[in-house]
Length: 302
Image: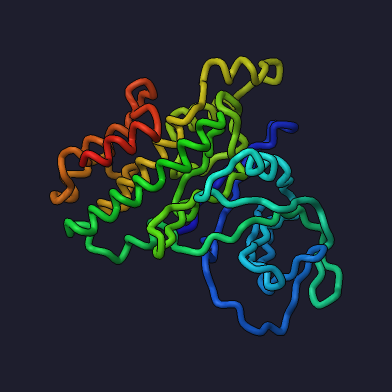
């Protein structure tokens, strides 16, 4: 699934729309004829877009279980330092970041910003359930267990006073061997109460969309502090996005376009589960399920 992402440049108050291709989550490493290198990091895949406002990802072939995210435009330092503050087995670790020269078979191409991360093997959560019969009771139970697993790393993130701000398909990775869900891609993560760095419209909360509208129309004389005090983002922002993904998996439809109760689309969904999903999709933040910890308790009682 490709999703449009809007990135905000606070220095110039500019807004950029980025188009992200699905990340390759797992693939066999074989012998390659073409070699790319940034500093000491070697990989064999490279995508160069006409627009340079895009970060790409490749699995390193000279370091086990590590990947590199790279872009000529983005500075990954904030993502690196956020990941350094987090310590959870379902959140990837970061080992290096900076800027380096990209070489193709020894020939210089372009300077790139980069971050080196633990590679997470697994499946995009939405893709994993796409071919499954979501009207099957066992499949619904499997979905519930997957979202129970999401709650732990999400609560850890929120306990550290961060908001992911970009939960969407491709950023929730299922390790089928363990059954655990991993959170990835913290490029747009912010401190609780902060200003968004960007947005993926399809999976954004109402308060994120409201903040984006204000940022686009914000007079230069108005301070960002005034905006963050009137629209305050916290963990409930991520929970709304999680609700959108939950709804999509169990109905195979998008809440953003349907706005039909999940139980009317999939009659096999238990009443309690339907209530939970719509508790996540509350447009009014005050009425939304408040924490990932509370969500886990509710899901355990389905």
